[in-house]
Structures are given as structure tokens and as C-alpha cells.
Image (cartoon, rainbow, N blue to C red; front, side, top):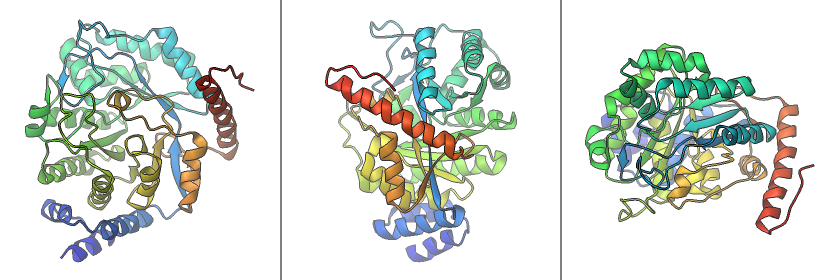
Length: 383
């Protein structure tokens, strides 16, 4: 029966939620991976696989929500709470562009005091300094929070942010899009229908976004499939998702540290099932940030066609004790080793030209030397 379901997905026929759930009973990882790879080859017959260069900048860690799975946030009165100085924000962006990046991932906690004009001013300031930069910013929980704090509609919030320079929306804060799960692991945060409504309104305004899933905590297999189904239905409606990324819950330093972490087997299995199920989302990204280089590379034959971001800076997952880092050279080599040409792309999966890629490679080589020298207590000047 599993073989028939896999053949059905490979042929491009849609799996039902019941059939998706059946796939979760299959522990033949090689079979699932082969089918997912066949779907990827059908959807992406090109000889290259992609990556992008950006930086995850967290403008604040102050958050009114209480998420048991999060090691990053701090309550409003916590002594370790911060709001990033504007000069430091701009410095981080300048460095990102110097390394060949065209985008930042801008996210923060749910700050209780900032009004919408504070965020508009931040976006306007960024775009005035870096007009060519794409701001991939503000996940649905943040947007929903802005709407409540400012007593205005999602459409008004998103329209104003878009006018101020917001380019695309990340899929953060999805975890599992089932209210039972969300109620168990978080308080004071957006629920399923409202998360989806943020994306729906953004897509109707012409915006594009990514979709995510964090699994391996309190959810059931059926709830994982329900999550995928809700994303697939919204994509049928709007077509606004550019990519899907899933990763395993990282329990260290969280209030859910008693949960055993899901391993590489479970990650590759779920990514393969996601590729088989999400027939209307074109791109699947590897989560090497949580899985490490080798599994991140292997994911390219388990349904992923994209290595994701170089992630010059990442703070949220790192706070949970996961500290995987890659150089641009390692990322490109990971793609090449799987028999593909590595190509840098933007948020819309449009490719950069060879001259830009080469310039980024050289800049990142110099930056890697600088980081290595700093680790040895030495000073290295960029060429």
C-alpha cells in the first residue's frame, strides 16, 4: 500500500490527509527519500540547487508571549531584555551586503509598548540606507500582535509595513498549526486561524512568504499532517508561499528540556513526507542550521532543492544549544558533492549572475579568515 501511495505522489497526484498519515507509519527511510527525490527532480529538473545569503537580525528579545519551547525570549522586565540600537542594526546589514547578501531576516519578540509607527520608522530607515535590500521580516505572531496593540486590521498593518519597505514575510511562529498543540506549548500567542489569516491577507496584498513547521515535541503524527494540510489549502487559495522549511524542536535550555530531541532519521522522514504532500509549494529548504552539515546536505536527496540561508547570524536556535555554522565554501561544496551546481538566489528564487556569486565567494573567504583569526585572538584585516 505504501508503494502505491508513493507512486501516486511521484506521478503528481494529490495525497489525501488519510494517505499522508499512512506515510508516517512507514519507516523505510530509503523508500520515502527516493520518492521525495523523484518529486523534486520532476519539479526541479534543473542541474543546480540553490542557497541564499542573509542574516537573522533580532531587533528585540523582549516578548509578552510565554513559549515553553523558546530559549531566546525574555519577559518585559527581565534584566537580559534588549532592543537593538539602530546603529548596530545598520552595521549588521552593511556587513551582510558586503558578504554578498541581498536580504535580512528581521524578527523579534512581541514587545508590549512599541506602536506601529516605530516599526514603520525602522523599515524606512533601513531602506533609506540600503534601497536594494529585501527585508524578510515580522512573522505572523508579530503581525497579529501589532494589530492588537494598535487596534487596527491586519490589512492596515500589512499595507503600512509594505509601504514602509517590508519585502516578504517569514513563516516563523507556526510550530504546529493545530490549536490543541499551540495551547499546550504557548500562552499569549497567535492561534492557528489567525496565523493563517496573516498570511492570507499578505498574499492578497501581493506579498510572498515562506511556510514552516517545528515538530518533535507534543504533537501527534495526525497533527503534523493537519499542519501540512492547512498550509496546502491556503496555498491553493493564494499561491503566496515560495518555500517550506521544517525542523526538529531543539529542547536544550527550554522549559520542555525533558523531551528527547528528534534525530536525523525523523527529520529526513518528515521532510520527505512534506515534499510528497505539499504538491503546490515549489521549494523545500534544508534545515542544516538544526541538523548540521551532513544531514543538511543529505536533505538535498530527501526532497529539498535549496540549502537555505548561509545565516551569517542566528540567535534563536543558538540559544537552545544548537550551534551549527557553515562557511559559504562549505555550503557550495555540500551542493556540489551531490552532483549539482551551487547557485545563489533571492527570496523569489531568481538567480544572481556569476559575477555577483564570485564576488560573494571571495568576500566570504576573507571574512572566514577574519573569524578564524579572531578565534585565535589575532587581528585580520579584510583585503
